[in-house]
Amino acid sequence: MSKKGFFIAVEGINGSGKTSVLKAIQSDLESLSIPYIITEEPRGTDVGLALWNILHSYKVSARTEALIMSASRSDHIEKVVVPAMDAGKHVISDRHAASTFVFQKSDLNFEQWMKLTEYATNKLEPSRVYILDIDPVIAAQRSTARNGISDKFEELDLTFQYTARDRYLLLAKKSDIYKVINAALEPENVAKIILNDLLNILGVTKNS
Image (cartoon, rainbow, N blue to C red; front, side, top):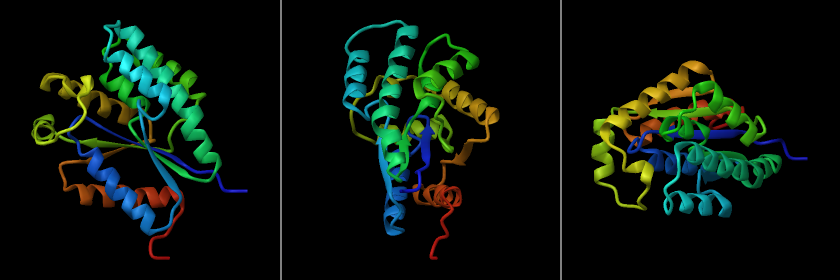
């Protein structure tokens, strides 16, 4: 029977460099022949994509938005994360529950968010959540130079990005699963820092 895989998430404000870092991590894991999958929230399943489209097609309340995101997360855990882990693959997710607390404009306090998250995930939480921390001004400059799918959460003003950063740092003080990484560094250097910590979690020695 395969050894159960680990669940890892990468988080950060818009423009923090998640895409570049994830690509670098993916390359490293492949070179080490480590079984893994890269996935994302909220568009990691067909249901998640449908719910994401609903959020971009209809005006809903902050509470409804939080519940829709949690429903998407539940489907993602059931259909993608757990099956991959059970198959012995490590799951690297581009965003997870922290994004709901950080970006959604709901009135959920930390305790309410925790209860909602525990229900949606059946109390499955990542072994590590990497928070790519960066000054929103620098992040905004990065985002301006990037083309891609328009995302309502990526069209928020700079003031909100500072609020989002503060919320991420608040989460980092709440649990040891969060690790704050200086994302102002070059993406390859950020990836190296994460990889070293990740290999330690996985119990893998590089070049062994």
